[in-house]
Image 1 (cartoon, rainbow, N blue to C red):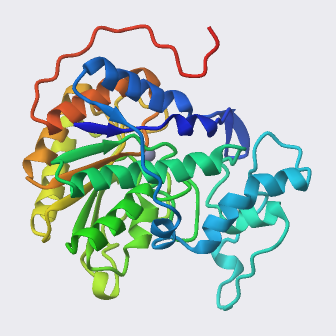
Image 2: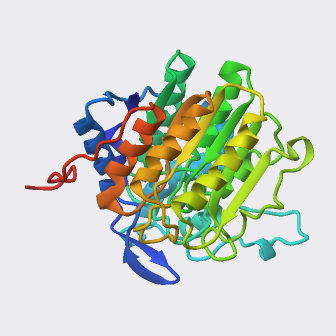
Length: 365
Ligand SMILES: [Zn+2]
């Protein structure tokens, strides 16, 4: 399987994030993608290639042009305004109640206010290289989509930063542009087909749900931790099914804490059944490994052998696969979990690699 990767993600270099008001070491770090790249290179069956630049048009096809403009301008403006911080994090947010019953929404000029206007949370810092990395992640996703449109049965885009929490007009949850949504929209236009998205990241992909909420040409199916208990909290319930012509094209499968391999695979089978009833030959997979038993910010109990089986069952659906990386924060396991999943998707055996020394890119040795 061809893999699309670019070292441009290293520019999104985050040291800490803010959770419930306190700084903590960042979870969404460059080492994640480098672990996966190293494991796939060691495997030998996953040739890497760089992305092709696709420009801004595919992005503004699903995102507010104002969000693109903000992300492009944010860090330079923060420097100009002498914001003396290692990263840009909002001070306040344009919360639901602020505008309730008022048809107004002005984007302020100061960078602290602009960030709050577009942001979901405080856990998604913007630094000098964020915009370039986020744009490159979109190109990674679109290049993987092009490989499949060009005849590959499956391709894997090693996207970083991830994307599924970014909605039409909002960044957050470590996400800036919604790589999977942009790829799915691109696929509908290039293929003339309807496109399904399967989101197997631990978290509900609120952004993807929002973007396709009223569209009947894209099916969104997500298996995730129940929002009653985990991030992103405000979406992911089973009664969220889409509206208008999109009614019925949104399927949420929330699961309890401690979900085991067998319980997860049963939920997967139900989800694949929903996809099998949707027309089209293309499936975008939002692939997260934060369902892993040792993930530091999640609470499922999925194991490495199960990832091999999940990949196998997804591929057995017989659709052409555009597989795009989302979350996964237990760094030591990420490479093997990705190898297991992707080898499963190729119906190849999974043999664990002997543990090898790992040096993150950019590390001075
Ligand atoms: Zn996640």
